[in-house]
Length: 462
Image 1 (cartoon, one colour):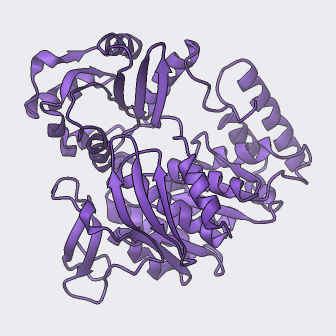
Image 2 (cartoon, rainbow, N blue to C red):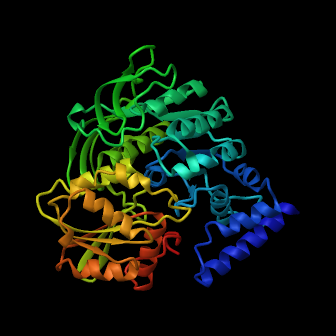
Image 3 (cartoon, helix red, strand yellow):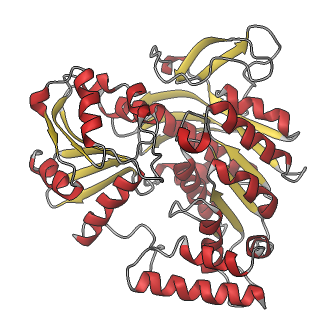
């Protein structure tokens, strides 16, 4: 009876949230259901014949999950996912209830692919009993919630201990913190880059220089960004594991990446990834690693990645009349730096809107902007609008980056800032917006109300 009541009231909440446009029905229904039946999540996932995939880590969860869903759907699997980005337990429950009948005896779908917040892992893993777990990377992020990176690694590692012994843990070999998690579970697979031409010389946002096994300093032969690269411990035997899934050649462009993949099935795939950046190559590798294990062939992987469109707010391109907006969510220095690098390597100057909020979902500690390489914007900007709750803090950071103050405008109201930003670009040009999470949501809501894009919670064909 508890399960029935939980699903009934959750479905009612979902219906009214979406009908009245008071939300996406991605969190509240799950919260209601969990209040009525605390075991509702574990009950619902038992209906999925192919089980559950968990994707966690600091950056790339949403993009990796969407890439995996696209590939696996093309391979013929019916996927349940939380692609709205609601990655706490309530979001997972809402996604399952949306695909379940009233009694909870049937859940439409073969496989669930869930992105999960790192802090939710200890709660979620025992309830979901996942068959596969992907850890993308571990960077310093929202210090008010997670603490330092070694604490995040320990949190995820202890969660892996509670996973079924026959599950497979897929790890980023190039991230020493992630690779060290292999000690928490006996069944692991690895992905990583093998193109040393992508290495970076930047010394900023290196969150880990020490071996998590013995504490000695790591020696890096080269790094791709942050602390991701080819490494070995200066004292013990810990070193970068050999990855089964690799990208061995890559050409980076402002709006795409041309890559050559090698899969665990010994297949080579040449493709053009429609979104730029080294970090998105890692996302594609993680999705490929999972899809290959689940039986997707090279044609299905290639088609899924080449036809991939960015998740909302993650390099999402939106047309506004005769102009364009590029939304790039930022929430920590490493992600911000790599997003900047993806779009400022071209010669022409660009127009930017930097929207900084410090709400709980953003992380209330904004000190990370001082570790972000905003110096990269110098002489690359036509104009920069600083907006959001902490607009003045962002403007101050730009001052210390020695950008021309004549090109910087402060407008805390996001709607007004968006209008100013769009007026600064010419026909056919793009305004590049780097918002934190709640700022991105507010900007998207403005665009939705104006009819330029769809609500992110709407499923295909809805």
